[in-house]
Amino acid sequence: MKAVDDGNGGLFFLNAPGGTGKKFLMSLILATIRANSDIAVAFASSGIATTLLEGCCTAHSALKFPLNLQTIEQPTCNIAKNSAIAKVLMAAKIIIWDEYTMAHRCALEA
Image (cartoon, rainbow, N blue to C red; front, side, top):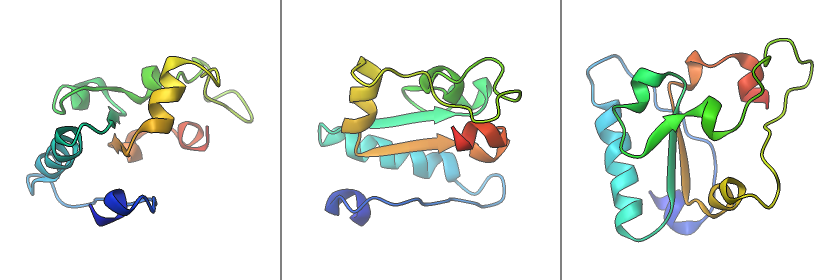
C-alpha cells in the first residue's frame, strides 16, 4: 500500500499455496483504494477467477487482446489512445491481474 500511496509504482507478485488468503488480500487492497475514491482495476486470466473479485473482468476483454494472440509475432492491445478504457487504465492507482501465470506469454508481452 505504501507504493500505491506514494505513487512510486512497481510490479509486485503474490504467490502462495491455495487457501492462504490471496483473493481476500486482493479484495482488501481493491476495497481500500476504492474507499478513497481512487480507481482500482482488476482483471483475471480466467472467467471463473473474475467472479471472485469485485468489479473484475477477464484480461482478454479488458485489454482488448487480438483473438489470434498466439499466432502474432508482436501482439499489442487494441486500445485506442484516447478511449475510455485507456483513460481508466492511466488514471488507475493500481491494476491487479489475478492468475497472470495462467495467461499466454504473448498476453503478458502485449
